[in-house]
Image: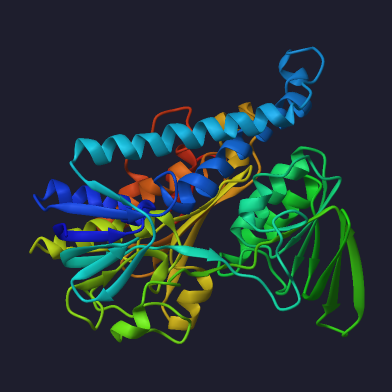
Length: 462
């Protein structure tokens, strides 16, 4: 029986980061993982492979639509689907092997297999039981489905199956207009699929800035994606190599059917806690099936912690990473901290969409007086140079103190630009602080500065 200071169950972004941080703090660490490779959903069948596909298809889009205008003449490239999948796999292999190297470097034991917790202080993997002073659950999440929608990962797929299709479908129906559905929908739209998104609500990307939602939907529609809003999917039917999606419009209860070669179910994710033995341990759960934890990420059972998608909060890899580092600090007797008010979100379509902090809706609901600074990328020289002038930066600041409360970006490099605002918010900066900071020209980041200027006397280039 091996004994450890801490055993982490799950090697996704939360788990492997937590394991490495624990090792850096001098603890004896093991990490339980049942996959053949480390990295969890994110590195194997989520964040990383989807970004590879988004990059490849964006290059295709550029070649088909913008190369000629730049004087790059020639036949548009054809798609070698098998090679594109091989490229995607190479990115997975590179990243997962990198985590394995980091485990060896930090002397972290990989306990290969699926873990269960028979009692506090013990983790069973296969036939072996290992002792641990502390156990951290980081088992992540799995795709959620709908009643009447049976996933087979061939015709009716989750994001996992969508990244492994044997061919590019002629028609793709996406159920759910959230991040995953829009990212993968845009991948296949660029590859020539007829993509139709069916969404229960009246807006895409629930919870985001309303102006971003409207602008984003218009842009995706311009790119060829179709949207059916306010539609409740009733069921799917599969017949040989085809599928039918039955839905009902909420506004008038009218029913309709869509034919598709492939149906992508992207209706959110749910915590993956099956087989851990939580009920036997007496661990408290929320009504939504999440593990309930305190401010120190410890459950009601002493010595058992949980982080990432299995607990409350946005299901984001970087949120899990932050919690992994913080939980490691707690276990090592230090003080871990996560600022949940400054966790950015990014959609990696083209253009990218990014946000952090409050929206106008949440500020109005809270009754907080605020001001808006907005700047269009059409006023940004660098963006116009690369055919990326659509979109804008919007900064929300406190009306009295000028403190930055939130930021919403739709445009080129939004996923990177948002972090300037994140750092500013961590330091309690005002919009004027951002506006008075010199930004290199020509860069996309100047649009952020101009939006900050718009919170005061006004932008220069608009």
